[in-house]
Length: 78
Image (cartoon, rainbow, N blue to C red; front, side):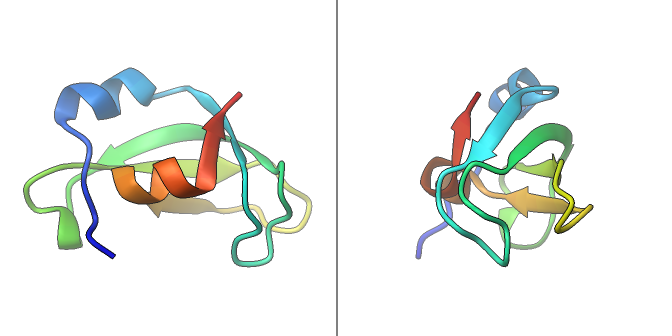
């Protein structure tokens, strides 16, 4: 899968946005709520940015990073 990244403006505009999972992913059920809490430039995203979602789930209290491609595939804005 080719991973498109966010521009700095796109990523900053998403900070604080509430999202939900639209597909089951790594043990999180569909519809799990989360919030975008961080942006980072790293790894496969040297030319762009990823966003980090903090999940609000009793199953997993953690953050997960998404490229723009992954965001569009796995998340919906609440």
